[in-house]
Image (cartoon, rainbow, N blue to C red):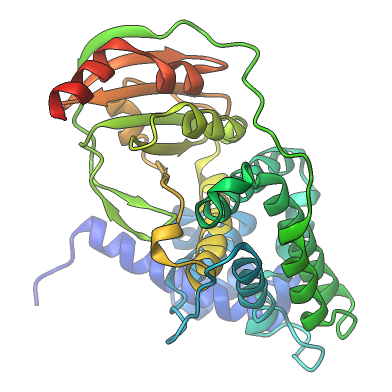
Length: 363
């Protein structure tokens, strides 16, 4: 066997650190876990740990994201065919992950119990997390809408379901035995008939979309909603959004033509901590979506976490931050429309002639 390349060695060491971190966090919890102990478990130096992760919190988020993304699917999921059935199945999938009163103080079942306290303790975490929750609610709401199109927007119902489920998770962590999972599932199911007056408001500020003719050659990416590689070379709308602007994703979805592919590219200026947090939040949602909805009801939206910045650069955004909002429309392998700044998603998705001509010619 030949010598490993530097990249292969780094990937192997990263995997060893993640495995060691899982054992350390499971045994001691986040606060009492030690980087030195993780390095010892991984049979690496402290410097090797820090060369892959800048701090304990970044490592904790990455470990949780890795576990969530690699979690096996249940053997026989039974997706719902109505909104009530889907909400019930989604809630059941969620509560089966809750720690039990009989679990050890830490242990594998309680690995994630320190996530919310860490997010809540730092303003730099809270704002992106709030936006990630909005994205989760939109994804769940879009799936509910596909089951019952006549009901209109279902994002507020999704928000209420996620509010109850996240609350149940927190209580299960700090008050073991208090939460009755069956009552949580029943309450989520009842949301199907709740009228929250949900309407999609048109954005008040929409910049002018510019007609352009630019090369579009995106790298292969992974769709976090489906957990699989996806080619992004086809026609559609691509929105590059910083983690402070994720609520704008719905503007792209609502403004785009019904058959248009919509891709949200997540970028951040704090890659080491916020990128794994984003992957974790969406992976947790994906697991429940797959158990609750038939494949045909999954939202017509792709979400990509662009940690390297390569996809943003392909869209003409070489420098990114958590405030980034740029959207483009792609037709016949070219970027034909571009918009930047607040309201860019709506502007690019609803822009006219070049994309419409292409659709007519393809018909």
